[in-house]
Length: 420
Image (cartoon, rainbow, N blue to C red; front, side, top):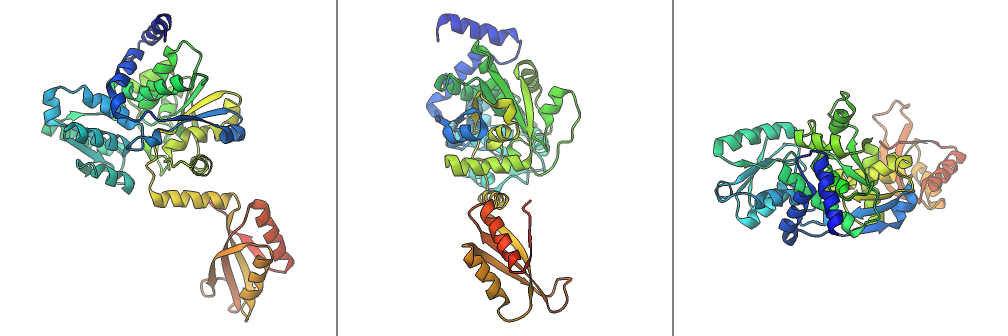
């Protein structure tokens, strides 16, 4: 970048009076670059065709800890003085910040204590413990874990490393966008997941420093619209079991809220179904595993296509730490919604050959039967009535519809059991 551009960037950051500047992000990148992965950014032709936008994906799920969080954690650790390094650090985290801090703390010889909410996915707990640091489970939500971590920090003289509301952490997270815009300068819109706001704060600082009109749009789960509510000046409930637990934050940070209000163009909300669909699409189309928060950017494209149509959109796949059982459930639910996996409730007569005859229809339609559930006792049907739930695989929704028509033509009373 030339001197004139740099001057523009510096003045752009300073003009908004925010606590993190472009120079802070550049310094952070120089500091942490040797110890992190410069993750690839790739144009997705298939997702571009589906969404109507030109889509670039930044694969932060390919970091060693499978999330961007280690950037901010490492920047913070690198700036500690010797006494702070000796005493150690503590953090409250739902998982990805914990893993990043634990990994780089162990690598640098800095003791790390992590306080995690009790419902944190097992994979995140195990991976954090795998770095040999102290892990404490406390409370049901991030706020509970945060309170416990603050108490312990005071008791033991530890340095608290906030997962998002810290200028050094924000500067580290901004290095994601620094790399994105270097590698794909045509991007004119950034869609960034928001939990506490660290990632989007760093992204906005970098975007505003380019001197180009780059839109910065945040995305939150509908169940946890904390930053959205703060920006819009409304009160909304923040609760529920979201797939995107990595961005399930009830109270945004003070620093991040200041930066978001000054620099971010808009925030959109996405439903759980959009998050599930996006996790499945990224695995099937891009062959990459993301957690719910990591899929939020694509979920925003799917939920608000008119908002982004025709734009050059950069999406950060911010994390890939999803529990394998949960991932399997998401994929199966998506198959059910698309008609490729179905459960049909069929009323039969309780006589020899009843299952054989209904199975013949499945065979004629080239539909694979996966499971059969017989029900004679727990039913409101007469004693000679019989319910069979048949789980089957079809090619698509139209194939399933042909099966239903064939069954009804044979005189069967059949009801599809809808997916959630």
